[in-house]
Image 1: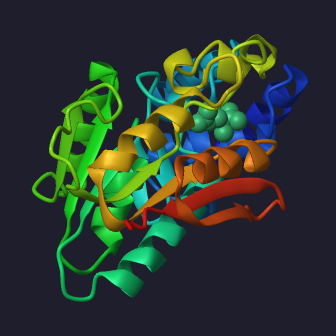
Image 2: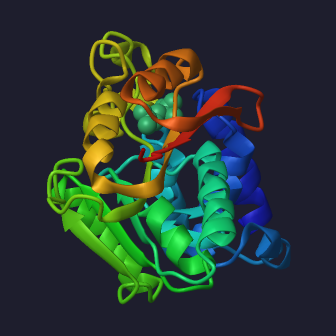
Length: 288
Ligand code: GLN
């Protein structure tokens, strides 16, 4: 059996078993085993598959059929310019979140030409946001990622080391912004916090609900708990003109902008993702 045969068989088997995007999943599994990009598979198609690879393909397919997300089975996933190690210790980095990073990068280059800003990513998970900022922002900044989960921070640190970003990013186990006690010390707070309403969590796709950490998804009864908490903390932690960038759920634009307004933030913006859903909320703190 050659790689072409096995990839075709994988696609039809996974499809039959209800695995989403079966064709892509089969190809990515093969590419991962061969240690090549998906585009390079063409050069392997006529080659025989050794028993070792055949076994590994079967193991991967079994995990997919059991309902494990593709990203965890592959053990890595691309986010912007980075390939991140990815497993059940943290939420799978999503494409919408890549756009959140764009917004922070634009803000950084427009506002911090000369000074060295302090940027904090709250609930960093795999480290996707803060590691991307550190990799892509060409000027100096202090980058800090926090997560209440020690497992997530361990994973984020593995990613930082693998990407040689460990000297640029400080990763700490902390509950929200609780470790920061110095007033007016932060320039930018960015977060993709848990924002799914508690009651909705069990209705999420089983691949999400049964495999991804609930800690990273459940935003309390209203889904807004973390926005409320971080905004309140930000009032004394942000420097004058400091900014906040949140990812939000698609139905949360109005509620999050109201929270921001009620706390007295200015420059409140709700923006849409590429699919046309409200997905980003940002604001600034203007001191009198
Ligand atoms: N966007 C994720 C989802 O829909 C949720 C991420 C989050 O709660 N921060 O599964």
